[in-house]
Length: 428
Image (cartoon, rainbow, N blue to C red; front, side):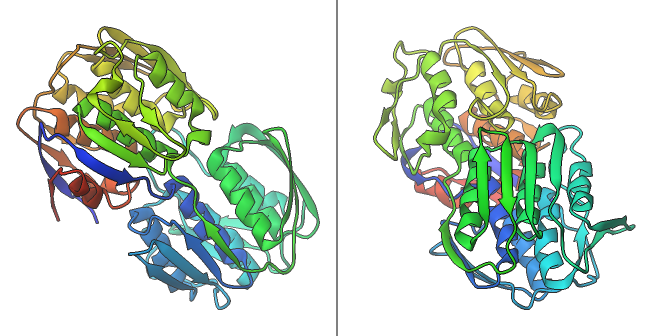
């Protein structure tokens, strides 16, 4: 699914209900972690239409694993008893988290050939920390032309893993690998985001012993035999925020279901500080025009960082808020300061309203602003979704090139928009 173009007619007003799917950043990790189990795994609330997930389904099947996908009920069953390291004809898999496929293959075959990590280009995101994890646990790593080969014919051996920086991907890799290593491994400078916590909870259901101290130190006792599990993927906090922001800016009337409030306290507090007051119960948010307490969005300053704060993936949606605020706002990104490429495209919809430099985006907001229609190019997943929202708010018809980037992270996006009375045309 490449080079897709979305034609979007602006000024459509959403009305209805939209359910937040299972988190992309949890589901694809759980899918890879399921491969270390010795029994069948059932993952519920799984975002089955995500491009990244379907690439992983394909890879697992080509390595003789069994994957059954119930797209209607969003359930995935994985049986990896016959999984084995396989030389593939092609390693062209444009997904970031290919490295998480290594431990399952190592356990079942003693070797793993995996694609080089792909994904969004939002700055330097090397895979050196994953190589460090494999080598620390006794594996031999060889970088070939088309793939990375990791060998541990006698299995992984527990060790101490001390990351030089706080890293989500490295933490995930270390957790899954340590779960099959002989002995007790320690992970220092771990980053336990809500999605990583979801992974820890899943690994515990398999029988792995995991002790967490604070938010950055973990002890993992590896197990020889790992049982099966039926496990639910947590709701996607980034998708929830996306729908909330869209509801506010569109002046729509929508109910957002399955909002993971526990993992969104600070992001939602920033919305409140910007003068946005929404109706909510334990799991849902209801957005109407009455949510703006003074009838306007207040300008603001914020900085992205690590959980529990505003993570970098949420940054483009606060930029959208700033563009519609009553004055100048500033959004700093210390986590991924190069996440600014989409701003040049967003500026085609919001002419003269946005300035950007490495680590800082400034919006010159305007109450009741209406973007202009334009042809824009997707640069990354979240930036692409920001362009889709901007086009939905604009006068006239806009064209979003490479909109498949948004589809990578938003499960059943067309279907959910249709449920809100919004139609977009995707040229395939």
